[in-house]
Image 1 (cartoon, rainbow, N blue to C red):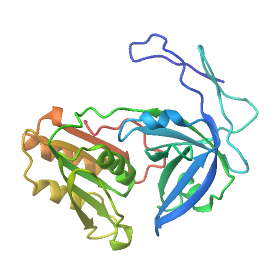
Image 2: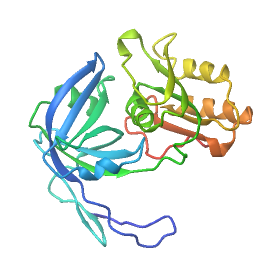
Image 3: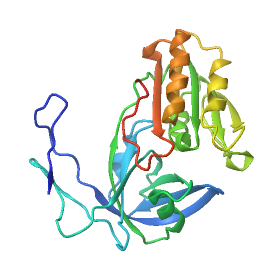
Image 4: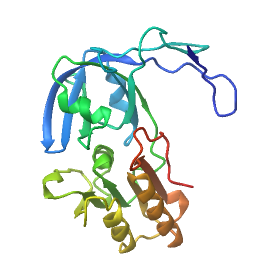
Length: 272
């Protein structure tokens, strides 16, 4: 079975890089609900130049498999084997590439019984998976002097990559919404940062604390604003910021997941 590859104008484009088989090298529990998985076993040096907040595709084994089924990528499209189940595919932001070890760190939030979270909870060294990417870019000038950054647990890796990339001349106000104090993690940056952790008022109040934090923030026209969280919440936050005359050119919003949806579509910019 083939999936055709076309660009947004309807014409052919260059084939995507095929998913690359890797394996789990080591794991670490960062918080009770956040697992760090380091993968290696392939040349991952391209990730050294990945843009902050970039994304990868993870190809995880289908139930009953030890390794994921992978497609062949050709100029005509992507061809999947007919006699094997397709893998579980999810999008994540890689947290860190270790050039010395040649490994890539991916962080998983353990929320409920979703297939990726379930895989991460059970993962062990030697487990097989595959990765595609990196993709995406940050449409901001990293030398901008002022930043307002917001996110929930799903955005922690992306926020970490952004803070890693900011120069010492920048000032960043960072607001992060999590369930409780056990979900807080250290976040370092050369920039002058203030990190405020917001605990949800109740377990299903997705984005409410971020909404209030944005509403109370002083954000001028020169401030770069980046927010990523649950898809419905990020739309409320985006509308509020635009109503306050934050320029669209200074605003990036991302719906990383949607409550009740198992596989939220990629490239949700919260603009509808």
